[in-house]
Image 1 (cartoon, rainbow, N blue to C red):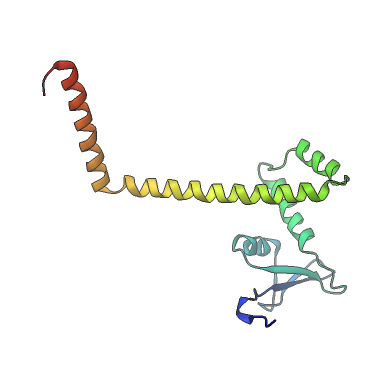
Image 2: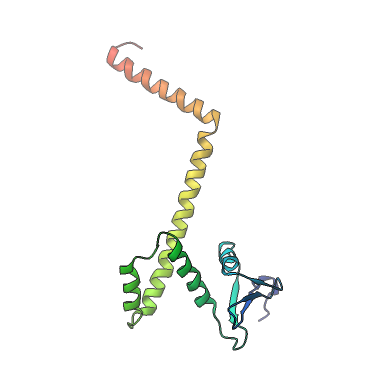
Length: 154
């Protein structure tokens, strides 16, 4: 079976050196954890590897970013939640938990996107003078009809 090369997603390789410096092989320069965080926001495909052992350090690097965020902002993860993660990671159902969390995060992101789109559409409608005029006309008609029912006048 032939592999379509245009379907392959280019993987950006970042090497981590013993001095904890990160080197982006695509850019040919050293980067920071903040730069890696920006790659996540930009939905770039990347992998962090140990420059000597070639071991994959992507997950550890992402956890380091989360750890720094948790230290500087209002924490996302409560102490109780972190304790539950530690307890559950030692059980046979760990893979089930991982699947559940991944699926839940996917649904959460889909719902968040849908809500953001609805808010944007609503804001667009509210800035449209035609929509505002039509809404006001409908409200006036409704009030007139309502008042005429009680006053007996049309």
